Amino acid sequence: FFFVFFYLFVRATMRTIASLNPSKASELSAQVGKGVRVRDSDKLHYLGPVADSVFSIPAEVSTSCTPSALLNEFVDQDVVYDLEEADKVLNWHDSLVKLIPIKTTADHNCLCHGVSLSLWGVQDESYHLRKAIEQSMLGDAASLFKNCWRDMLVQRDMESFGFEIEREEEEWEREWEQELELVKDTNCSLTEIHVYVLANVIRRPIIVYSRKHVRDLFGNDMAPCYFGGVYLPFLWEPTECFQSPVMLAYNDAHFTALIPLESPKDSAMPVPLVNRFDEGLKVQFVTDKVYQPGTSQWSLMLKKWMEMDCSYPLPGLSALVVIQRSADFTQEIRQLVRQQQDRDSTPAPPCTPTWSMADASDVVYQSPPVPNSTSPIVTTTR
Image (cartoon, rainbow, N blue to C red):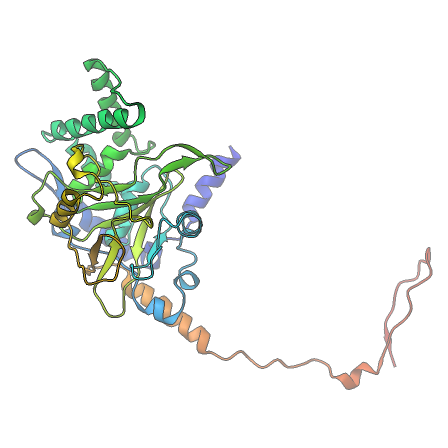
């Protein structure tokens, strides 16, 4: 009971970016809810123009002070240590955009929270994105998602065991129903198929950076981690989608929003599609071996869905994040910068001593009393 109470207390008191302006956060959430549309052909729920947004940390943060110093209360330090300092999954090359892991509430809706933070700077507290995932998996598009999910599980069996685990049709149906129940129950965490559906809901790629293995408390590899990779909205034509991707970190069974730190010079900034060993990120729910990471077909596929720029001196392939402003919290963060600058520029008040060295000669120090003496220690002045 104590731990449940403590978790709820931390969740309720955790300060978020949206807390800088609660009224704006409420307005943005309402706009997202109104921006959900339904495609007539297959009842796929998706976001309209409201999705044309990328939240970022303004460049003033990097030129004024270190991001961690200013945004310390908003930065997920566990992700910084695990995925940036320890394993070098994030921010491993100076030419890449700095991705800042922003604290994302761990309430089983962290996937939708993370995507919502990446787009608008506000979490999915009203479950608009989660409901869109659920409705999309119940409409006529459900069969397309189901087939992709089924192929993905078969591929995973082949990679893990060298053969496909036989399942009766009833078992396939039961497992698919479990995926539906997960998204319906807000007390349940989501899986890879929900990330894929969400990419189609927001009509833009989702890049998930993670370790290759889940680790135990002692740091030992325990099981494969399948979340990492690129999720492309294949139920749309590339021309119908936004090419700037959303970036998430997956660490310790939790999604965290990765917010780009703007460049003072460029509005388009590169994010890696390879790891620090120049190994390409897997495109999820693509089972054809011709699209294996690092192949020419893999590169061509990614270039259809994301804008690339080879002018950057980068290792491997990189996509561009193009900043697209909406009514986010950029102004509030700039206000934090100004407040920090004011504090740094304000000189400290002079220290006025309450006594001088000349007064020291007037102090008489009495020797400690003899043991077992009941007389107190007294300091007197002349």
